[in-house]
Length: 292
Figure 1 (cartoon, rainbow, N blue to C red):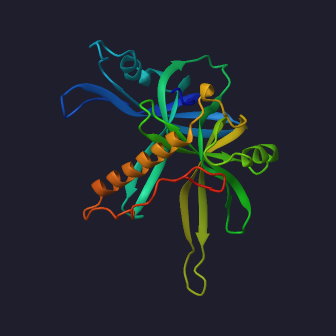
Figure 2: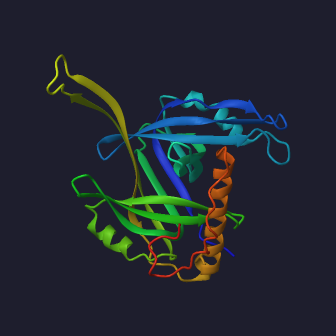
């Protein structure tokens, strides 16, 4: 069964730094290289900062030196220059002991890197296909104002036995996009594309000693916004030949995802994991607003 698994990113900008290092696995001593790179792209008149993760083994399955390994080993030569990086989105699911719950980080995973001409326009975009896990939801600030909408999509791995969960955004000013995404129902297969906008800004605040004495306290912190803005999408895909996720496949993927959560939590906790109470597998219906 060919399920829709479109998942790609493309970032063009200046390579600011990289820390990729060759290492060896403790298990068998085989080589690999991993680390991250920072790319700065000027988009819509603002600088965006993208941290992109890289990993590859040194040898291919037939024992030859990996071309990706060679490319990553020379990445330092491109620092300060314009580059194009393509890859995919990846979910890092983990147990947060501080929050006493499962947590998720959405990662930009790089694959191919190449130097490009200085005249190349900066870009940061994505394409993604999967099934609707959470319908469009409002995100509001303390004043009750909507500053963003979130849509959560799921996607099967190539083995068909596990899924990833990814969040995409819609800006409130893009009324047409809001109305379009609002029509998506739980469990429907859809394709979306859009822009990556990762903003980093230094914020300084002053706390006065009201009723006290002495100088006010000044604090400076870094505020990071990672936006995956949808700019277009398909109508729900209802044809199996075009990658539609059947209901039974979605149920199996969601069940496997939840079971994996339990495994991760149990491994992270010293005293084991809470029982899920024998929760039934979710049914895919239009009345639901979330599968997970």
